[in-house]
Amino acid sequence: MVLSTGLRFVVKARGLSEDRLHVDDYLITLATGLEVAYSIIMLSGGVGNGFGKHASTLTTSEKEAFLKADYIASHLYNVGLASVKLGILTLYYRIFAIPWFRKTVIDCGAFVCLWIATIEIFMGLLCRPLEAFWNASVKGHCFNSSALSYYVNTFNMVTDIVIFALPIGVIVRLRTTRSNKIALCIIFSIGFVTCGISAARLAFVFAQTSSDVTWDGVDLGVLTGFESLGGILCANLLIIYRLPAPRLPYGHESKSFASRSRPRRHRLSDTGSEQWIQLQNGNSSNDNHLSSKSSADFTVQKVVDMETGTEIVRLDTMPGNAITVRRDFHQVIEENR
Image (cartoon, helix red, strand yellow):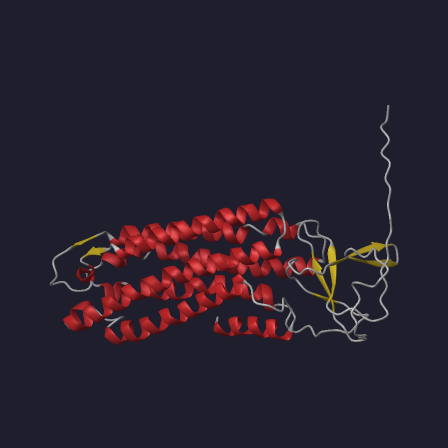
């Protein structure tokens, strides 16, 4: 998980994807950090205080320390899951420039924000006073933590299924090679592992209210540790799966599944054996789009327009001998009578 997030930034540094960082990069990095923090808390505060042992063998101080660690880890887990979901959704919004798809992504993102806000509010009010959650000698009132866990896991599983299934139909309709379609579908399928883990966690939620939580909660804790892994890997692999491809000089092509958000875009159309590169607004004769520096070694990137399935060529640096071509097309529609 940490390695895949690191490779994500290697791709950014090498210029194999977008040069600058985007919101999804920050969200996935946040999710990775929260997942690492969750693991550290559960190993130090959990395993170090009797997690995996029967509660009857633990001292009162060990039980309190474990429950404190469990409470902190629950916050890290919830916010980490939300960060993964929002990171994937913002990546979708960036690379799939389809109006209806983007609207769906925004709706899903709003639902995830409401979902995590509700969870955190309930977590903050889980016990009144909060100390009653880990200190049995403090008199207070606590909500049913199992009911909260069922709510978290059920909606978590539903949102995972929707998020990871959302782009499959778009990918299948892309006009690209079959190997690219298969690779992308496999990457998104990794995310469905998270759905399976969420479903499995539902079978162990009872451990939240068990009198022997340090023993009965082991399976739940292990599954929780792996739940965010599938989503983070899926989000990172979409960026890094082209990492082995080198940057090729002019005259060669390197395919990249990337964003449409860069301002300089050039369409490629195949007309028999001809290939035309149409420069954006390329209708002036004063070489506005040409670089003042002549370069024989500039990068050609081919990416996919998700709306039409056509391929787009990006020229990061224009050569000094480049020319712009303008072609006018007139279409007459005749009605059959």
